[in-house]
Length: 273
Image (tube, rainbow, N blue to C red; front, side, top):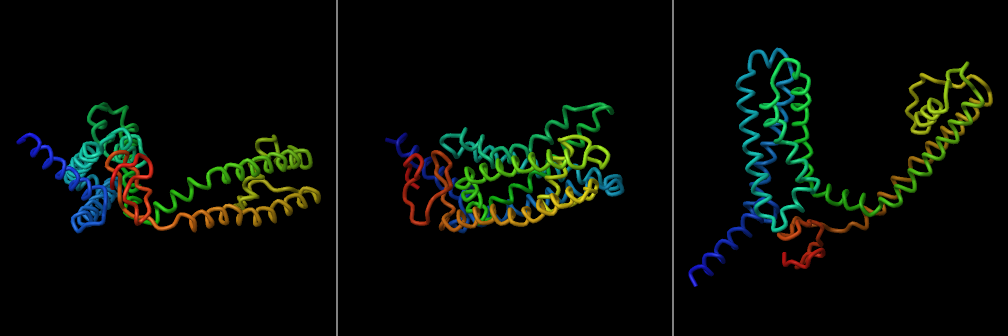
C-alpha cells in the first residue's frame, strides 16, 4: 500500500515536472520558458563575443567559465527532458532533441581534442554551439504552425522543386548551345548555374548572354522567375490557414505536440493529455 502511494506521488510529481518543462500553460511553465530563453540568448552572446580576438585575449577565462555554466544548465535540461518522456527515443531523435544535443556536445568534445594542429576542429566545435539559437523556435507558437504547414505541403513542394530543376536544366542546356564557351557558358553545369541564378532573380552578373537569342531566352527566364515566386507562397499560405489553432500540450508518452486547443487525448498514441 505504501509502495502504491509512493508510486502515485512520484507519478504526480513527474507529470507536474513534465508540464513545467515541456508546456507553457502554467505559471511555472512560463517562468521556466522565460528563464531558458534568457540562458539561450546569453549563451549565444558568449559564443559570439568569445570569437572576437581582443575580447578573448582579455576576458577569455570568464567567458570560458560562463560557457561551462550554460553547458551544465543545458545538460541538466536535456537529461530531464529524456527522463520525463516515457518513450525517450522520441525526444532524443526529434528535431529539438538533436538541437539540444548539438548545444552541449561541442563543449565536452573540445576537452578531448588537444594539440595545436587541432585548433581548426575546436573552432568548428565552438561554432556548433550557435545551434542553441535554434532552440528559440520552441518559444514561438507560430513556429509550430509553420512546421505543420511545411509538413502538410511537402509533397506539393517536392513536385514544385522537380519542375524547377527540370526547367533550369532545359534552359541551361539551351543557353549552352546558343552562347557557347566563347561567351562564358563553358559547360552545361555552369549554364544550369546561370539559369538558377537568373530564375531566382539573384542575378550575380558573372555570366551573361551576349547574343540576341540568348538575351531573349534570358528575358523569358526572368519573367518566369517572377511568376514562380508566387507558387510556394500560395502553397504555404493555404497550409498555414489549414493548420488551425495550436496549443502547448505535449504528450507524455510519444512527445507529440501537434494538438488542437480542445484536445483531451494524444492523436498519435491515445495517451491522456
